[in-house]
Length: 290
Image (cartoon, rainbow, N blue to C red; front, side, top):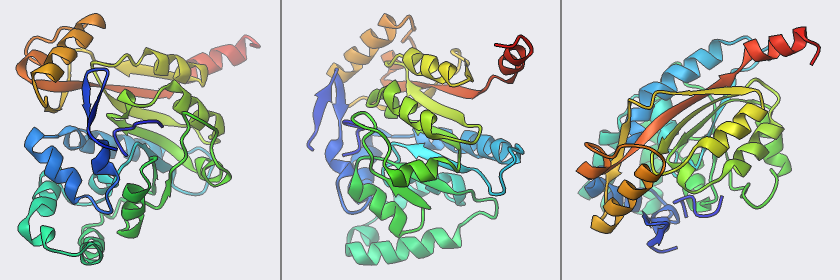
């Protein structure tokens, strides 16, 4: 995954500001300090959706003995995992990591306290969560404090899954994504889906400035049917400046969307795509001998 927004210095990619350096820090404090003023909120909107989808997927009997794992793509510091498996909100996490108390801690002290903080808030319905991101410091922190059960830094835009990731994919039943669609291509999904062995669902929040159609085609090629309600959008964050706002407005219009009241009002917005096995198509093909 080249430039997942998870790993350099600020720059511009296709008109969208980049925050690569905040994903290459030893802990998430810089991440929250940078994004808090921009009112970054998409993980908050994804939290109830991912919990519901994970519950539904776990209830599906796929003949395997263990609860299917969630694979969070472009996971950074394990934010989605924290929100999925713990009684905590994004606002509480933001307040925690931007507080003067946390800012004064050493990295080791913060990690010790974070491990206790999340352990005390672990939900009884927690599910295994794996993380995938090229930003090694971020995923290592998430592992250290107990947010991720396993983490991988494989760059699937450039190569195939490592043996270790390949073994983990056998347990994956749900793939989640919030924002990474701006930085990865359908190749990453191809590499992942080629390696799974359980029925896999995909739940993705993707900026309206990005075409998800290549992903949908890849998902369809792996037997997944994708649905989306284009009338409902989820805000991601404020624009960094007018240049970024104009880029987003033009990109949304180029894809046939209407930026009025959304991007024109000053924020990136996402759509939620849900992909699940197309059982009807499979049964029809089996009946027809295809």
